[in-house]
Amino acid sequence: MVFRRSSQDDKPMLGLKTGSFERRLSLTKAGVVAGGRLASSMAGSMFSGKEKKAQSRREAYAKQAAYLVKELSHLKGSVVKIGQVMALYGEHFLPPEVTEALHTLEDQNLALDWGSIEPVLIDQLGREKLDQLEIERTPIGAASLGQVHRATRKSDGRQLCLKIQYPGVAAAVDSDLNAVASILKVARLVSRGPEFNEWLEEVRSMMHREVDYELELRTTRRFHEKLKDDSRFIVPEVFPEFSGPQVMCMSYEAGISPNHAKVHALPQARRNDLAKAALELFLEELFVWGELQTDPNFGNYRVRLGDEGDGPAEPDKLILLDFGAVQRYPASFLDPVCEMIRASYERDLDAVVSGAVELKFMRAEWPMPVLCEFAEVCMATLEPLMKHIDGKQPGVVLNDEGEYCWKQSDLPSRIARRATRSAISRYFKIPPKEFVFLNRKLIGVYTFIAVMEAEFNGAPLLEKYLYDKDVKTRSEGFRASA
Image (cartoon, rainbow, N blue to C red; front, side, top):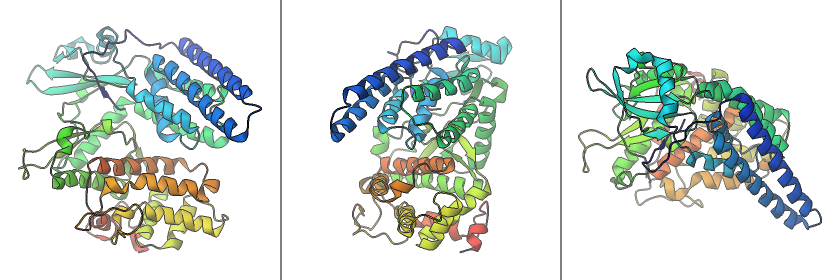
């Protein structure tokens, strides 16, 4: 869950529609209206030329998507979160006009008023526990599923955060997801098929994890233990005594956004260190822990700056927030992925193809040129992590020391353009769900590094996980084949 910082100018909502019938009625109405509008737009261009028809279709999709987003934002709760998840992971199922519109849901999170939130706290914690806390009534952040309030533990002044789930959200997940899927179909904004239904079930699983605050508390505690001795990271401490199924209590950790001007003003070396920390955390999740935080949104990160100047006594730290989207992956998936990374690093085209076929990213019966192009694209994603980076290759930018310039090189955009223009796009229609989440995670890490405007070559970090026997990886299977 990504929390938008609340402003003093934000007017709190008095409540949200939580009744199943009331929500379904609103969603059904939105779907029928959007479907009717889309049909009218299509009919109006029936006798137009091919190019004009395509333009009319895109405009119709954009208008209907904007209308649906407006209706979804009024409902708040899991409907909005479902829309956000679909925006993030639905590029293979939804028209681009729809995903673009759904992305705007992230900017429409208004907080609920205290009168709607206090009963949740009373129900979850009880009066006796609440009397031990002094809670600020104005939230410091709001999201689609809940909002965050600062609190002080009266006994010792410890600064805390209470993440409070909106009433009725957890109970509405299944009905909301079914309703959103239905209106997308009624509105003719998505094609029917088993692949979409399978992806929809993965979204359902994600949503149930997102509203399970007890699971998130355990996950946060586990990541806190993993990283507590690493001075580059801060994971909030959890307080089970002030937590429940719909309330999660954590330590308050002060920090600023990665996009903050103070972060951009840091010396190059310090920005590089923050970027390297993010990259190494991803590699640790993949190669060692076997579980990844799959939500790449910047709202899940804060930065705590060290001492001002070029030589801080303490390193700048990444504050890691929100572990509701953490996913564990089986060795049957991760081992071939790690083998593909090793093969890509060593430019072993045949091994990359074999790994991709094993993972069902590709099919063995595809034409060999398509298989090879897909493997080349996979290898290209490791461009900034390769031992020898070709600075003469189009799009690659190196500094005077031969270090990779992550922002100027704009690798994610170049990879996307290459995949779209190649024959891959005709075969690689709907990838396995694991690929979708892993791909989004990698894009998120690369984007964070680019925002840091980092300049470094990632090969030494990757080599540590590929070859260093002192690093106890989750599985040695991919190393054995090296």
